[in-house]
Image (cartoon, rainbow, N blue to C red; front, side, top):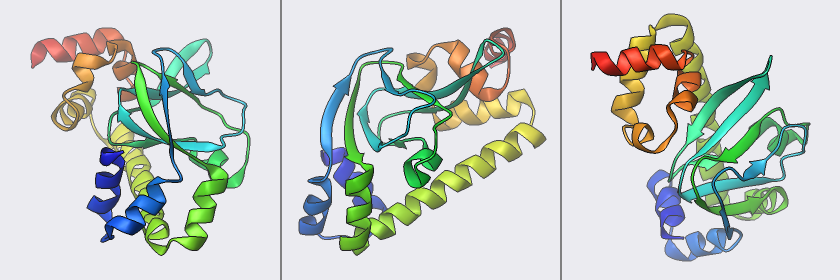
Length: 187
């Protein structure tokens, strides 16, 4: 769980003992390519830190899969509103590759929020980063070209293009696979 410990300590100043106490609330699981971490319509009762692998969050609209986000190692993934507010979840979260995850239950997450101030501080940073990412993605969809979105993703996450099917990347960028193919040829 070193990557999880490093993730926490990279965002908050924390001692080893506290980090170990926090990490002890996580359990490690492995899921295979195409397996689901969460299905649409279910309550989300856990949050995962991705030790390795790739996962995607998507929905199906008019028979088409729409990818909201692709998460890679070192990132957390959950259906945030369902996890926090115990509402019905709208997203599928599926492994794109075999994945090793460190998972915390909703119950343990909120217990840590009450007992470990450093976890609460880290959790607030996670929430702020989630909102900032959502805001950035919404702005990007409204105010940038497909080429600009492609270039930005390529510079920030080049390994996605080596490990994730291009149709998922195209969907996340809001373009067709054909448009993504043309963009890739230009670069």
